[in-house]
Image 1 (cartoon, rainbow, N blue to C red):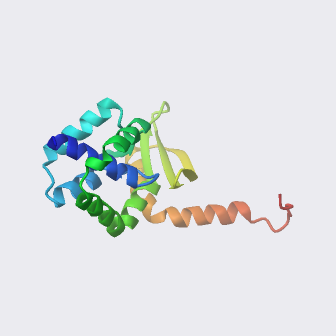
Image 2: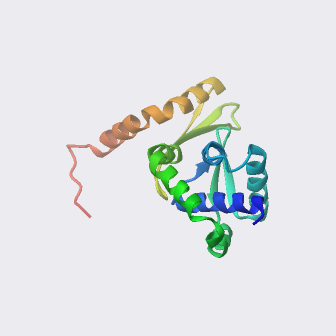
Length: 180
């Protein structure tokens, strides 16, 4: 079996098994490199070819690339998964079990910013649970430094902010709403 083909199947298998989440370049690379499967050059070559072929999609959030398997990638994996050795499959599943919290947190809570037309920055802070967006906050700030600071603090403060918003917006003792 061609080595590059094996690395592609490893990546597709990982992206398929992560459920609705994405994996970052660091997460994919650290798994493959830590187990000595290949080099960083080969990982990047495999990722690049699979993006070009439409097997995986990539999105960039605050200079971090997040990969997700596409329908075409799922179809390819269906045909070639049997060529991935069982010990490698088990390594991947063990890795996910060991790192589940880290993988989940990186995919569910994130923030990014971008310049807008008002010579300011728009900050977007998101909390997701599987495919559902629980909170998507967008607001403008005057400086890039403030945008970076908000994004850096979002992961640590997101639960507190979400709880505060829910309590403040849902609580109104003077008005009763019938259950629907």
